[in-house]
Structures are given as C-alpha cells and as structure tokens.
Length: 114
Image 1 (cartoon, rainbow, N blue to C red):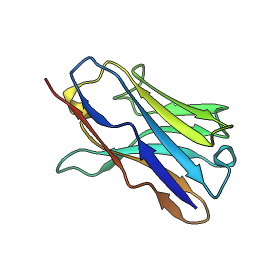
Image 2: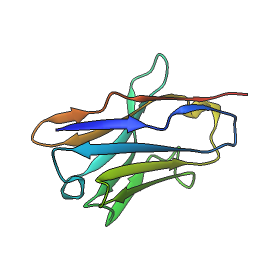
Image 3: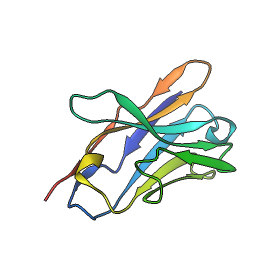
Image 4: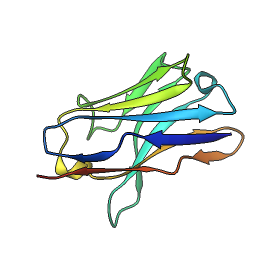
C-alpha cells in the first residue's frame, strides 16, 4: 500500500495549483483521506479531509473557501484544488491515510512567491 503525491510547484500569490494523491493497494473511498502541510520550521498541520470518497469533507479555517478536497473513485485518487494562494500556504504537502497503520506519501513542495 502506498500514496504518491504530485502537482506541487512555484506559483505567484493569487494563483492556483491542483495536487494529486494516487492511492495503491487499497480503495481510498473506504477510508478517511487527508492532506497535511508542513511549513519551514513548523510542525505538520491538517489542511483538509475527505470521508467515504466524498460524502463529507472538512477544512482548516485558514484554507476554508480557497481549497477544495475531492476524490475520483475510478482513478483511486484524491485531489486538493488550491485557489487564491498566499505566501503562508508555502510548504510541503503530504497525503495521509490510516490503513491499519499510518500511511504517508513522500510529499510535494508548494512555494507561493512573487
């Protein structure tokens, strides 16, 4: 079982990015899937979660209204659409699931800078 993230990069403030997390070895919609991020010099924080493939979602207050988490059952993939990006959104973004054990992706770097 593994998670593989992609889609990070350098973007200007106000721009958008879409992160992808491909799950393999398990069916993601049967589990709670989460996106975390870690800014330089800070701890890892929860950004968004999706339950049961999309029946319910929740977000950190700092990203609510700007980020959207969604899932594609056919591709067994979870997405994080990030709009109106700010410099404080800079960090490494990780996909996470509890699949009988902690399962983390390798992370993808997001840098918001002019």
